[in-house]
Length: 182
Image (cartoon, rainbow, N blue to C red; front, side):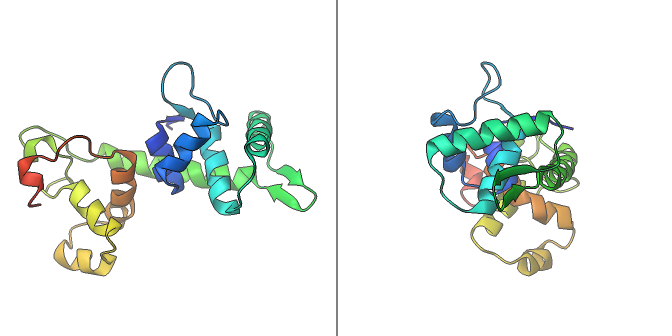
């Protein structure tokens, strides 16, 4: 099981904008592990809770929430009482995230990334179809049904994780010339 994540991976896995994750880092609510830009699993739990709560807390309240969550996580607590009627179910969130991350990284390990196939662009196994292409279709709002009609060999996992993949690993620099028409 993977237990450390880049900020982009964390954002993609918990379905938050990367900008929100970087703000939490900038405000020193969550911190990198040592000198590397990597976040611990407890940061994923915190970020997922923020997404689910969908309520804006002050920076000081978020710092306190994260510190209390980390202590509860390390103590293997099932729940964390935030306020009188507000209980965070750490075990439910962590189990959901553990399952999601394991499935995602198993799926990701099956992808093909070879320089002689589409110039090194990541593709689905036994195809020349770019994961980024499918992820971008989903990001633009294309329906799963339409994509399945055109690419029936794609699995449920392929469609589930293609969008996570492009958010976790955004392309950098100029697109290759052949990507423009893809």
